[in-house]
Amino acid sequence: MTSAMRRLSFMLSRSNTDAVVVTPCIDDAPLMDLVQAFARRYGGAGGSRFGGLIPAYFNYGPFEAYFAGQGYCAGETSGEIYVLGCECGEVGCDPFTTVVTLGDDTVTWDAFANGAGAGYAALGPFIFEREQYEEAVRDMIAELATRNAS
Image (tube, rainbow, N blue to C red; front, top):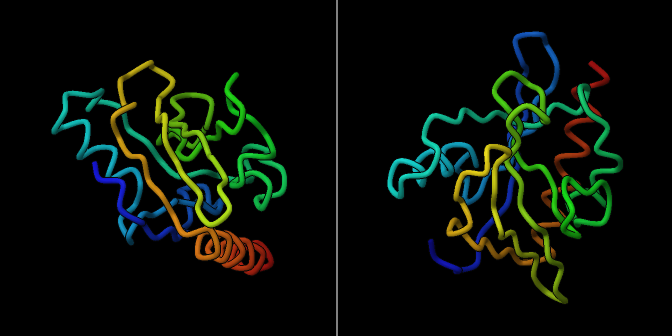
């Protein structure tokens, strides 16, 4: 993959249990679609089925800190976060993780991995302009609050 500047957004939807699902999108493509395309092309665990994050099922803490890699840590590496969970809705079942690195003007996602140990390290890195990244997280939080209120 290329290391050109990317754009982060989030898609919010409802699960079959009516819980809100948060799916990161890179350049408007759902992350799970990018992961599946990578797996098909490079021989990763193409059978893995990922889904978005369901905040009602797991306490990620404040999303501002979480997506800055400064909140809940998904593994032993500092800044490692879940960006996708299993299609069943449980983030711990078959998670997909990345390491978030904050720069002065950029945010980088790299060192991708999934719970099955499949090789996704060559996916990315995805580099975002920090101001756009933080705005996308704030927009997602506002939309999540609206959806949870209804």
